[in-house]
Length: 453
Image (tube, rainbow, N blue to C red):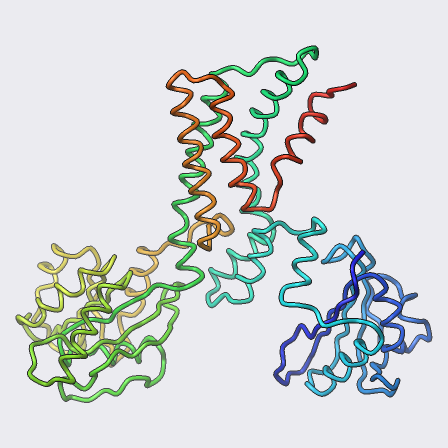
């Protein structure tokens, strides 16, 4: 049994449409009090999963808006229990009045994530799917949205379940043999255990390797724009953003502090940090900016090293190179390609994997930059990526437990000792999706081996 809850699902800002979600025992009867259908039938008697036109009523049964209403009887609903939605105009006043009417009729305000939590508890979502809903809402790139919707469709769960089920087969067979010696159950073989452990360990290692890309999808790539003064760093930032965010002048040292913005480049979200020009200076304020530029490069996963292609490389350019190589990856941008070139591109290409001529002023060469970013941060298979630290930590523990199980088996220990670590891996994998080892183990024994027939 679950008490009825309600919440505005469309946010608090004014919009064309607003949505109120409702779920729980007795919610249809309460909806009868706040919705008057044009067809004359009570809301609780409307056809399931069909939109109905009517009037939304306030706590004194006065009309406040024309609305659409739909009901989803449990368990065939998002939450797995009786569930309904009102779709009305997106006036905050209308939504608040409708919510007050629902509260007056016996509902309570839903807590944060409570609709999704009920869907999980009722078996309609696993934990990876619940987390995917948050990822989908917060996605800032098309690639992030595609990954989230694939996880919501169960792509990550299926990959985890394949490993979980293979380990569960071994564990359940072993315990069935031990606990029910009179049954005709084939004993587990060491070769079978070794094969399953090796395959599972390999699968988890591959899955764990996706975490870096998953973090990129959710959080973006910390990216430092580095170079000596007056090479066009701020012009590059403005070109990537599509508007004048940073001040651009012909005076060296205009940028004295870091400027941070986000931009999608090649389908990848870059968290851009425009830094002060790197050079020796006696100006105390500018020196602080240069120090911050070095720190930004050291903390970045990507540096965009900007060089002035119209001038030969100077000592300050080499200083900027030393700063930029602190980052995880580098792309060298030879700026001012609209002017006669004085930089040897061949020499740069022998030092760096990605060298891209551009003109930040004219906006040319940015397509090649996008291609370089995509090469460094490939999209990966949608839905097959770990996207948060909780998932990565659980997979890491599972992989470590399997490594211990495999080493114990290779060391000649008995299967029961090996399976202790295997159960540890199962517990860790169960945390990913919300599965419970003990319940699954018992169910597998009785369903697969027909014990106690």
